Image 1: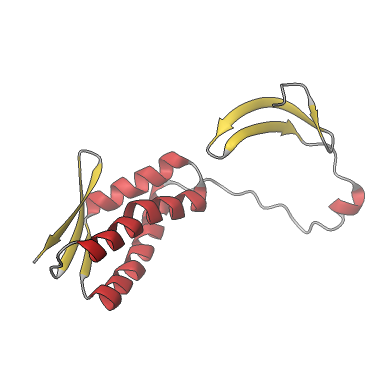
Image 2: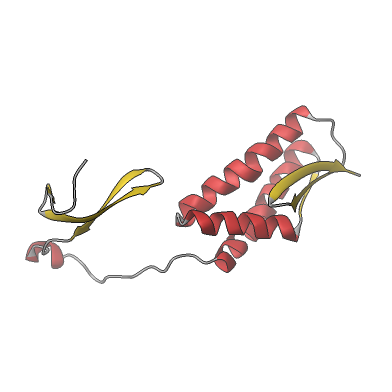
Length: 142
């Protein structure tokens, strides 16, 4: 592990070391770019972190698509309550991983669990996903 002040290959000087979701993260001072590299850059576009409202919009779109898949493949209607949507968006915001975190939370918390319920439990017409005490609840109804 590198320490603060050490130099990484490429001339990057470490000014902070943190533990991230995928391992150790080195925060470094960026060395000067070579002129031949800068000549190839058209523009620099700063990205802002996604907020909870952004995740809710993405989540609504993805839930619609996923519900259509469930209806087609399993002949069931998927209902996700507003509380469950808010909880999922909150989880996505907490992870601070942007779209990667969105995909991971959506796949782990909704897709995998719903598909497992469709595969193993007695089916009724509606699979409802709700939220209570900051936990998602999956129940068949109808």
